[in-house]
Image 1 (cartoon, rainbow, N blue to C red):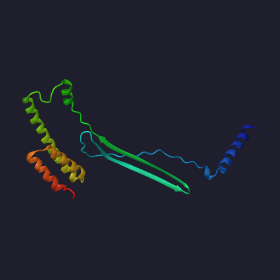
Image 2: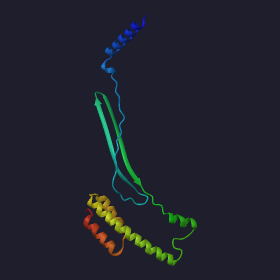
Image 3: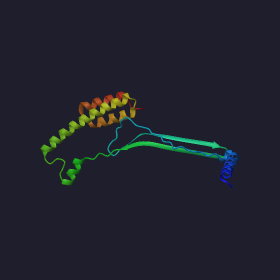
Image 4: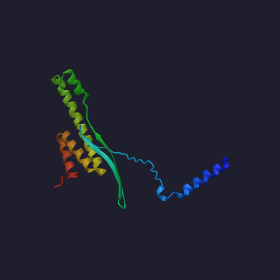
Length: 170
């Protein structure tokens, strides 16, 4: 056989194979897919605590005669917080107490009281912001943390605002 005849026979065989293929010989190509989501916001998480930032769950199923197929997926984001006090670690390593003498203790107490008051005020502002944005759970947690930190008149103001804005369910 010469080259032309061989080429013709090859084309004829290929055409016969194409014509004889049934629909059962169809091929399925599954393209890769991916999904993303993002989180924008703030959460209050106590030391050694965790919080879920959100997630997405999807499932799909198909029933054809006796055959059943299905798939599901889940994606989520969470945060876990551990506060590390480097000064406390240093004091423990050096064998020092938190208050070496009364003068240091007085200055440390007034400083920590100022810090606690500032943090409490910040938590009340955050609670108000969360309440305005519709996040009552975060507002409730912020108010509760602020009330624990504050003292005196500020504590009473925060407590009365909390009870007015987010009354306890009965």
